[in-house]
Image (cartoon, rainbow, N blue to C red; front, side, top):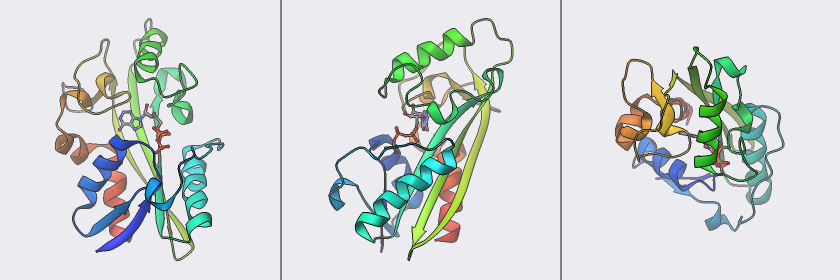
Length: 189
Ligand code: ITT
């Protein structure tokens, strides 16, 4: 079994990624390697932030590791909230406030096209590689479902009439940005 650190403080991400990675990998958490502080995400893009998070862990532990940075990119909002998805409405990770703000911003917009994009930075033996995963969809006009996290109750993937929050973890992983990025990660691991 390969041991690899996943640089995240988000428990939802951890369970999604470990489900897609499967039994061949033992995911080590930040807590387990003694990193309890929030890693500063100061980059201007998802690519930069994924890289910052992975390097932060590699520099402190020397262990193989990866980090994911994800954003929701809404067409009518010129790609916002994008890299600012976690702190769209407030300073913290307030999912309800973020969703309420998104609904407000799109109130008078006909174009509700959006996509989730995940960038994963992998550092193995000191060498960094990046992969990404994208899922296209639309933003619903009201919240539906209790599964998942973040913007899931508003995101309807293309070809479906349910939000990610109305899908099981397996269903979401099979088509999601993160599921696709992790599938690409597995190919290079
Ligand atoms: P880490 O940096 O500790 O990994 P985070 O929650 O800060 O966790 P990101 O910066 O990658 O993660 O994600 C930014 C926000 O995007 C996150 O807070 C959610 O609101 C949203 N998000 C990310 N992945 C999502 C998903 O699969 N479904 C719905 N919303 C998601």
